[in-house]
Image 1 (cartoon, one colour):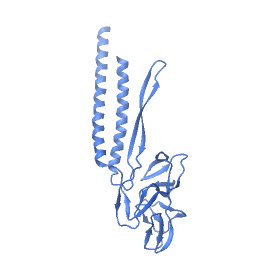
Image 2 (cartoon, rainbow, N blue to C red):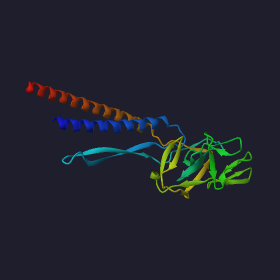
Image 3 (cartoon, one colour):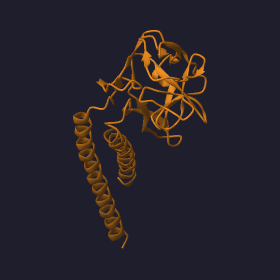
Image 4 (cartoon, rainbow, N blue to C red):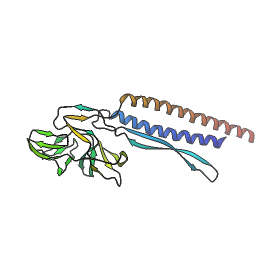
Length: 242
């Protein structure tokens, strides 16, 4: 009985840890519901069979973080330096750590006249950083930029083989996993004066938070019940030995 109770305690603890991790994700999703281009986080759960010793096997729980790359709704801003990508693709951004990728097209111009992100990272075009020397900025569907009627470059819109090729780095940026290769995006269109909103569904996330809290409390009760059974078992063994 004691060994079985210990196993139940391990199972409940693993479940609580997984639920706590998922709850942190839901909280982060809700905190970024208004973040331009934010992609919500989720997890996948699965079980694996492994040996505890030469006689016994047990099922362990594992989770993997995933990012929902589904596009968010487009919101009209009217700002000439706000761009949204319709379809597949990411903006290429030059950072101190290397080239990174984002769906957030809320850009501005730095003191050198270069197109940059709010954090000051350079937005890359087909020939490197994009220079904005003028006032009238226009962007075509294919990413070609003209300033006062003169060509200023083409936005470097890239894509990857699948969502697993990118991982979140922070600051609304993605970095490629080892071995992942970018390629020029084809099926996309740039919408000037629009921004892509977060793909977080507030009601779904709030419902998930409520469900997770309830499930976590249930596992806490299970742990307390197992502890009570162990206390009773130990107490009875003690009386028998006496």
